[in-house]
Amino acid sequence: MCECKKAPVAGGTTIRAEGNERRGGLNAALRQSIARETNGVNGAGEAFARCRESVSAEEAARMYGIHIDHRGKARCPFHDDHRPSMSFHAGRFRCWSCGVSGNCIDLTMKLLGVDAMGAVRRLDADFHLGLPLDRPLSREERDQADRRRQLNDTRQRFEEWREKMLRDLNTAYRIGHQALLSGHDLSDREALAVRWMDALEAWADALDSKEMSEQMKVFRDREEVERLCQMILRNTPMKSGAT
Image 1 (cartoon, rainbow, N blue to C red):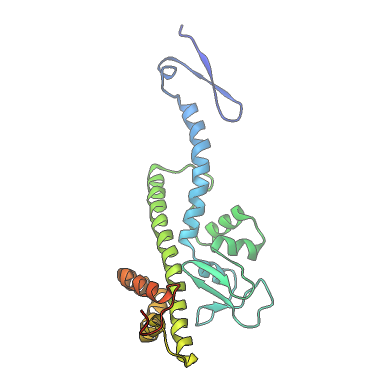
Image 2 (image 1 turned 90 degrees about the horizontal axis):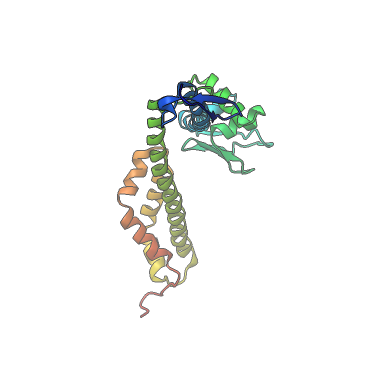
């Protein structure tokens, strides 16, 4: 008779690992136990990621009774809002009055008074998402999760660039606008900003657009746009004709 030994399993239970399993294999019970422990955690994380990706904050707002006007704005339900001050962009929401912001899960939590998991379960049910909340991930879902993480990393880097570029474009435009109002002799950077005001405004509008195709037009020309902004935003202004 072969020797047997106890193998620890999460939760304090034990199983018998015999023969070739003792030499490196895992029996079915142990494999299932490990799957429940590891895939359960991964499944929850994947459920949250897929929920955020599948449902925009705007869609959640409409589902739970927030009226959104033709401009894509809504009265914020989290303060006494008399003029629509909540906007939606890139799947997220922001109130420009009280400052609350977030994704579809954050919005659902605040609207329905539930915790994060409760919000995900509600969104899963109402939008028929089929999220892996109470089951392990399949191999295909794990592969999809890896691809999604890579894509999300790329999106995050792009969004960080877009936000910084928007700030620079708006600042450069203000320099030109203020220079026109000032009446004084223009420095080189002010004259440059004035000459390019129309383009600066157009680029900012494109980056602020919900259409990715418009944003990508600026991204393709980013080296030239960034160089122009750097020239306008440089710290040491030079008067025209100065050496």
